[in-house]
Image (cartoon, rainbow, N blue to C red):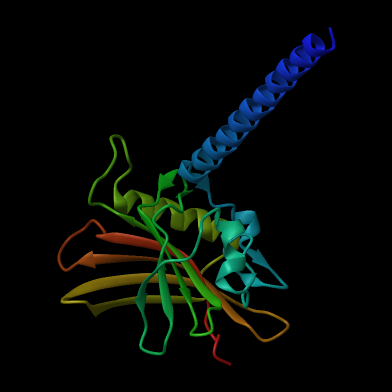
Length: 218
């Protein structure tokens, strides 16, 4: 009888372990799928969280002066692959899976720039017209409508740029609006919304919306 009971107990123990293991696998898989779904989802940039007196203009959740690794939670993205380097040792990260919308328009890419000491100083979302989705608003309509949203919330821009620029191998016409603010600890910050046009073309080739800490080296 004792041997028989031991066999039953061993069988029950094995069954319990199997259930716990299976539950653990399901739980881990579910968490993984939920994390992946969160990274694939698009989120409207919350304009109520892009400005504060303490931090000036900034990407929601990002505090200027923070290391790149501290931005990962705010971006819901692992920032660890450098795509390019600047002339002063800056690192440029291509945030291909940072998915945001502005006025309902999905971004096509995003970029994070950091100093040579790996301190974040710029985050920008880009919108292009290479592969428009069905029903997607034209670039010019998006640019005009979102500019209206920004001015209604933040007032007229501090600085306006309207000029031809040499970009890579060709000249383009560039229009940019910048809202600027200083913080109590001396940081100069800006929210920037701009468009680049091929010369003679009415629709912007690409549009950018981003935030920058401009006096990062001081």
